[in-house]
Length: 369
Ligand SMILES: Nc1ncnc2c1ncn2[C@@H]1O[C@H](COP(=O)(O)OP(=O)(O)OP(=O)(O)O)[C@@H](O)[C@H]1O
Ligand SMILES: CC(=O)N[C@H]1[C@@H]2OC[C@@H](O2)[C@@H](O)[C@@H]1O[C@H](C)C(=O)O
Image (tube, rainbow, N blue to C red):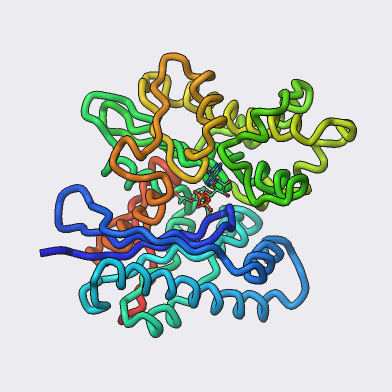
């Protein structure tokens, strides 16, 4: 009998919501349906604004969380309708929420990570139990609270006797190294699509550089690339995680000082090279035995970025997760369905080897149906 869960991810790209309906009755979960919905323009603008300090944040965050829950519920309804499933057949929804701040272990030693969400409203609108707030327990146990996908990556992508890299290219990038001996490393590399999206929107009016065609038309500016790669976060040893708190338009603006006359396409080419170089260096440093790098997240659809990754890793097969049974835009949503399944089974969701937490923890809070 099917054991159905829904996973919902809205990530740092702020492009919208990805959802999957997945069946966990077999040893490897299978995605039954995928649905996605872009954020309404106003909601996207408000979420983007809430990533930086501003006026009356408590009020605005609460209303944005309500709007998010409504857009999550619409994706859930679409999954149920297309999958022919009734709410009572779905054990739970794993809803990541929208990260607006991520400052683990800072300020008072614990710090905070904030994923906007209204899980109570989502449970009410869907009639399905919701598991939410996955990251804060790991933080409370001394961890980074991120990345959480590596345990799921291990479950679906590991190969006995082989070291495999799994790279998620979302707004931010994160790498999992699934060791031949069963060990798992994972951390945020840093730059993903976020800076490229911002530059593309600013100069072409498009939300992202489809296929990386615009970046491919430019020339890398070596001095700018060097200035970007000098960011200390890149050299930090894991455990580490980051977000828009660091890699944001003002960070880019300050690195662009002195490059005011650069052609926008050349800056885009340099930003693509920045993401590729940072990720290549991380795999070389932490997964040098890997002969396979599985790429997921929207960046796997950026043909030019995939070519730059492959150029930097001549001995490694760089392949989209599509070739490994899970399309790139479904991986993170499936990870949060898996995390909800873990929570309901009272099983840990984090990997202390990744986040640096004191140990494995059952993650999240459950809002019954
Ligand atoms: N066809 C495409 N060509 C190039 N880039 C693409 C394409 N499709 C999606 N993308 C990129 O992928 C991004 C969305 O990726 P994804 O949904 O994995 O990110 P996210 O989940 O928001 O981020 P994170 O993993 O950091 O939480 C878009 O913003 C865009 O930059
Ligand atoms: C705090 C937060 O939302 N982190 C996200 C973000 O997006 C990519 C990277 O930064 C990763 O650390 C994480 O998401 C994935 C799903 C994770 O936890 O594995």
